[in-house]
Image (cartoon, rainbow, N blue to C red; front, side, top):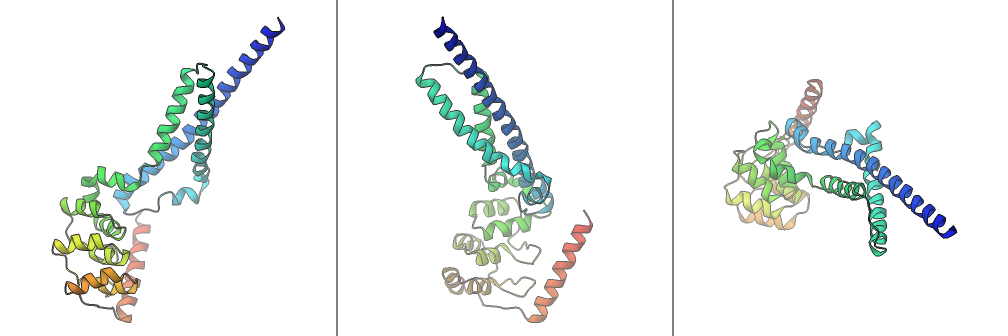
Amino acid sequence: MAENDADGKAKQWATQSSKALVSFGVAATVLTGVLAVRMVWEETSLTIQEGPQMVGFSLAHGPGVVLLFAPITLVIWIATAIVVLLIGLLRKKKLSRWYWLSLGSAIAVIGILSIPAVFWQWLMIGSFAKSPHAADLMVYDAAEGDVLTVRGYLAHGVPLTATNYEGSTATFGAAAGGSLAVIEMLTSRGADLNATNLYGDSPLEAAIGNKHVAIASFLKAHGASQIKGTPEQRDAASKSIVRKDIERMNSR
């Protein structure tokens, strides 16, 4: 009789513990899901509307910062839930449908949150290419060495001559960022290797200034010139960019 009572109490404790674990997991999953939705929105709609983003910046500098801790909590919960799952399987004990559902949902949410921002550009390249900030995005991706995405922008009508807010082409971005693969691709398509930005600098100047030796050698071999802007050009460019930034902020 005492053994039956002990078994009953043990089962009751296990059931309550399982419910508590599931409840905690659901809460962490919901908060992480909210964060995932916010991040995807920033990486898609907001980026299309306003150009390259410091994803999560506004959250990190406001009350939403709490959400940034949710994924850490959820990962710890998933690890705990998997341990409990393995113990249950070894003891041949069935876990509730809610347990499986909460674990699966948690893993799915973490998976969505882990998707790199560039994936959304690949998936929605047509929409990104129609963005008023398509040139800024293409130059940014060129600097990051993302050949496929830069090629995608070109295929969807963004011209080789397109420039970002600093007047830099994708060729300049790739030279400054150190991406030989992007430089080679753009050169093969007839990109102007001597196009200067608002500061008066050419891609070769950017490559040399950032000590990208291989890119500098490639550009020289293809007839590029090292062109450096004058102090007057730099001063005018800085004032122009600041003025545009203020206008953009005021228009929001």
